[in-house]
Amino acid sequence: MAVRTPEASPGPEAAERGPGPVKVRLGVNGRERGIDIEPRVSLLEVLRAELDLTGAKRGCDQGTCGACTVWVDGRRVLACLTLAITCEGREVTTIEGLARPDGTGDGQLHPMQEEFIAQDAFQCGYCTPGQIMSAVGCVQEGHATDDAEIKEWMSGNICRCAAYPHIRAAIRAARDRV
Amino acid sequence: MRPVTYLLADDVEGAVRTVTADPDTHFLAGGTTEVDLLRQNVLTPHRLVDINRLPLTGIEALPDGGVRIGALARMSEVAEDRGVRERFPMISRALELGASAQLRHMASMGGNMMQKVRCGYYRDGESPCNKRLPGSGCAALTGVSRTHAVLGTSEHCIATHPSDVAVPLVALDARIHTRIHTRTGDGERDHAIGDFFLEPGDTPDREHPLAHGELITAIEVPGLPIARRSLYLKVRDRESYEFALVSVAAAVDMVDGVIGDVRLALGGVGTRPWRAIRAEEFLIGAPAIPENFEQAARIELSDARTTAMNAFKPELARRTLVRALETLTRDGSQR
Image (tube, rainbow over all chains, first blue to last red; front, top):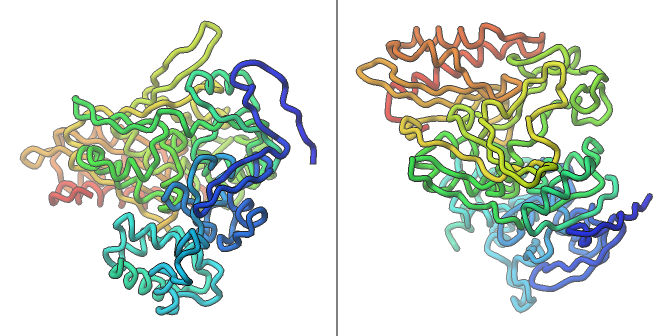
């Protein structure tokens, strides 16, 4: 691909980076990670291709399906529409870091993960990491009072297998535990 | 996606100057439009100026009963703000009925005002589209146009303005504050929201009166006591996470069964968020009865121009407007 050299100019543009690979430091699941990426690369691409964190899935890659949902500074967002370079200095949390980011949990899952298993809340499983990250956010935001509210506040996560009733059951069960 | 360079802005003036100096440099806020359309080669900046760390995130209740919303406040933050909820329930509601929870955490209020249309011919990057490539024609005129506009259209563009929250903001006479850099220096401007969204006319590519590089810093909503009892009613093809076919923002003040003051705006039907000024004028001083609501809606929609596919919209808009007014005048519903 063509690499465009930024024109040398004074002032704020001195801090211009790219378009070729630049060093970016990201805090992901409690660990500081350094990578060389072009500024145009999405957070989703970095997680999956650079950091081997393949939990977040590429579904639509245009902000429609929610399969790539992760947290940035504790808020559920879409990794496909987030440029990785904009996350410097932020804390990124993926499904891999949900249970116990520092690995001290001895295999203990987050209650939401346990309830997705207990309630059989997936079939193919492709949307599940995004569903779970979004579901924990939904409960933390206080929008899991009843099924109608869960439906509305989880509408950004599409499940092609239509496991929705079981997903809602898992969210209700996890909500009551945490 | 084309290669881009990246610049993290640490002050408003610097960001504005950098973008102003180069037509191929864009602001990057929440990214929900910019990154999406960059990936599809619909937007083709060479450089992005990340404005997310600028101090434009505040939401401030004003002494006059209004509210000042920082351009980088996220949709979710504004929706749950207590002052906004109490003073302008239709703003909160419109925000919560837009997009998804994830997108609302990302998308900024300034970006919401600047978002691009959802017309499939604009967004596919290759169909004739006078917005994307002036003079190339409009594929929607003879194409799939079920969701397209019926008010404020032209022979060059019939794309619907997609924002929900802009609809109550138009009803409330909000003002858009900006920073601008010109040859004479740095300055501030202030746009009435009624002048902020342009109808396509002969220049569909021109959507706002902003100069390139002019940055929205805040949205100011003036105090309006009747807005404490207001609603936003949205009709769409599915119950959530979908753009409006028709929406109505409404606030009514009624004294002894007569309408003293009313604010009305329509979404989903116009090329801009549509202030229903003619309906308002008809209703002020009129008894709050269904016949008058019907007549007001008919007057507002009398200029509607439809395609074969969206011919249902004027009737749907009429019914939605009537229902909104009936709901507000019948009981104490806030929504």
